[in-house]
Structures are given as structure tokens and as C-alpha cells.
Image (cartoon, rainbow over all chains, first blue to last red):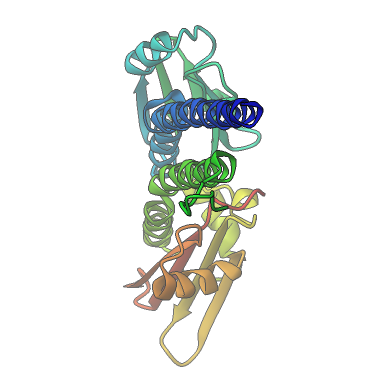
Length: 131
Length: 152
């Protein structure tokens, strides 16, 4: 009788361990897939793409060129991530562009076209860059 | 461990650890895949190459003596930036026998480009090699390399 009761208790313990392990595994799986979805669709990927596009655009500027960056689409993206701060910063001293669409740190990318502060005009809706 | 009936009893904890490790590997690889997929070094090196050749033609540069300053002044290229680890420029100008050579930046990128051709390693630099004629009729060979994975 005693042995039977002990066996039942041991079985219950094993069952409890299995159930808790399965719950942890399910939570971890959900976490991993959420992370992967965020990686694929999140602000970071959009920031990486936008910062590279603008850097290539600036790098391809021959002397006497003017480019106009329309900020409307980037602003919509930033709004979808509840971000209302500065989206695009061009730092002519460090030759770097920074784009931030979400609440993270943003993405920085270098460019090699020589620009001065007076070559960049931030008109809020548009950014004008002359070379 | 085997029970009295001889069937295998699998402990949940080691199995869970194995699954977690597999999921962690998938997550890390996803991150690497997305960051490597938006590597624009090749396009960047093509743009730089094109700009140097057009710079030589527009400014009618026929010697490499002091050419780097002319490239910086006449073509709006930031030499300080191009001298960092991320970029490499090699310019050869001449008629084949007596040639001048100018190197700017990090020459390691050329080796990376060669290795990349063989191994397809995504984080190695990308290069563009162009042979053209300068306005003086001399042969102008320009090799440019970019690797933005370098920190500085």
C-alpha cells in the first residue's frame, strides 16, 4: 500500500517536471519567433535599409548636384512605432548619417562625399542636400 | 534511464535544454541573415570607382603627383574618410611602361575581396576594378574597395 502511494507520488513529480518543462519550452519558442518577426519587420531593419539608401545617394553626388529627401514616408514609419523624435541626422563633421524610426538607438552609416553644414538644409518635410 | 518494464524514460529537462539551444541558434542566424542581406559595399565601391574616373576626366588630371588633393578639392571626396579602414583606392596611370601609382586607405580590403570570391564570406569587403582612358590618353586603372563592417 505504502509502496503504491510512493510510486504515485513519484509519477506526479515526473509529470509536474514534464509539464513545467513544456511550458518553459512553449514560452521560449514564442519569444524566439517574436524576436525573429521583429528582426524581419521591425524598425531596425527599416532603419538599416533607409540609412544605406541615403548614404549611397550622398556618395553618388557629383559636384553641383542637389538631392531632396522626402521625409513623409519615414515619418509615417516612425509614427507606426510611436516615435516622434528626430528621424534623420546628417553629421558633416563625422561624415555620418543617423536614422531613427523607433525607440531604439537608431542606425548610423558613413558616407565619403565632402559636405559642409551649409550644404544641408533641414526643412522638416524635406531635406535638401547640395554638393 | 530504463524503468522496470524496460521502456526508456526520457527526462524533460535535457530535452528542453537541447530545444532551447536549437531555437537560440535559429534566432542568432536570423539576425545574421538580415544584417548580411543589406550589405551595400559592392554598390558603394562601384559608385566610388565611377566618381574617381569621372573626376580624372572632368579635371583633366594627367599625373598622380598631388592627385589626391585634386580628387578631394575638385570632386568633393572626403580624403580623411577615405583614408580610414573602411575604404581602399588604388589608381594606376600611364602608358604601360612608366606607370604612376597612388594608394589611399586600407589595402587589406583587396585580399578580402579575393577571399570573398572563393569563400562567399558575406562580411568581407567588396571591390570594383575598372580600366579606362584618362583625358591625356594614358591608361587609367582604378580599383576601389569598401568594407563598412569595420568599426573605424
